[in-house]
Amino acid sequence: MPTDVLACDGCGQSASPEHIARRLLRLEWATRYRPVHIGALLLGSVSPFAEEEFLYRGRFQGEAGRLLEAVGVSTPGKSPETVLSEFQRSGFFLTHVLECPLETSEVLSASCPSLLAERVSQVLTRIRRSLKPKRVVLISDSLAPLAARLSSAELGCPVILDHGKPFGLDSCDFSEAALHLRQALGLATAGV
Ligand SMILES: [Zn+2]
Image (cartoon, rainbow, N blue to C red):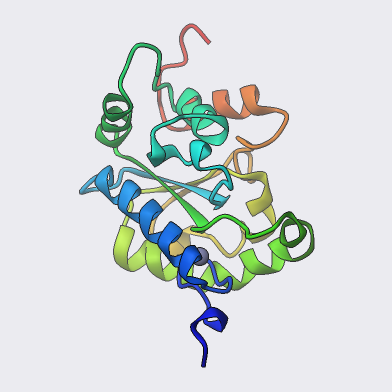
């Protein structure tokens, strides 16, 4: 079987050599800042397509910037290493149901929900056996259809939700979702 028809173990998409190389790189960046004991696992839906938006790349654009803002880690005047160390020391670790970006925007519209649904059992196993967080926080609106399967019973730890739904850090109500997230995690909300 040619290697390009094998599925990537991080996302289930076709694993071309380029795809695997990019996956390994993201894995390496993230592993560097993985807390020994994960206090709160922030679970998104799909790793962002733009490298600059992938938190552990250290550029803090888009999704990464919003996430840091939501958990109250400031970036101005700090090196990427300082910012990521601070995030790590707070016990946070970010991962996604699909650990790789979607290969095309066509996939995004057509098969993203099914790709996500197909990955749930692998994600449950990864969280229970490998990441073992104290709690899991769902941080993407697009995880709403999966919320029932990503339950405390399945994950073996509390799942933090925003009134029964994922925190919509990727939604147009970002500010409110971020505020709710800080309150749910017991982070300071002063000055917001
Ligand atoms: Zn992949």
